[in-house]
Image (cartoon, rainbow over all chains, first blue to last red; front, side, top):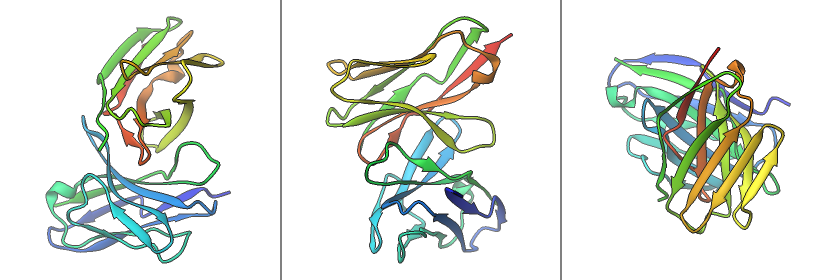
Length: 112
Length: 107
């Protein structure tokens, strides 16, 4: 099982550029979430999805878009990158009958 | 949303017990979780406790839950250098996470 796969692992963007962080899971999980991790602030929820076609905002959604066209994929789009979006981004998934989230290995994003 | 708080740092000597504490605000949380994050890696689920339980033991790990005070703790017995990591508690249906406690084990 691959679990949760995130690509790329590292990315450097210039201010104003856009990009998509990819997340895929092969466990047929209904729930998927995106978090950002910043020093001293823990993990903060950006967007989440409870199933294909259904998404909702978390604590810090501004500047990010998501879509969930399939059960497997949950991409995170940065519309116009800003230095404040420099962070480590984690995708996670969970399914009915499972406990807790399975996390990807993260994408380290630097915006210059 | 949920407010989950943890102290940022804990340092213990190898062989001692470690206790990591967490407080949360949402009393409707059905499950509460502890995750471990090693350097450069994602989070791994360590253990969880159902909200109607007071205690759960899993080998060297003991989770205590005080629902009245909304306080969760993780005790690691016989702490080893391999336990050095960041530990997160999580609560709420959308998994709100604490700030993480960085555990350093001194040989």
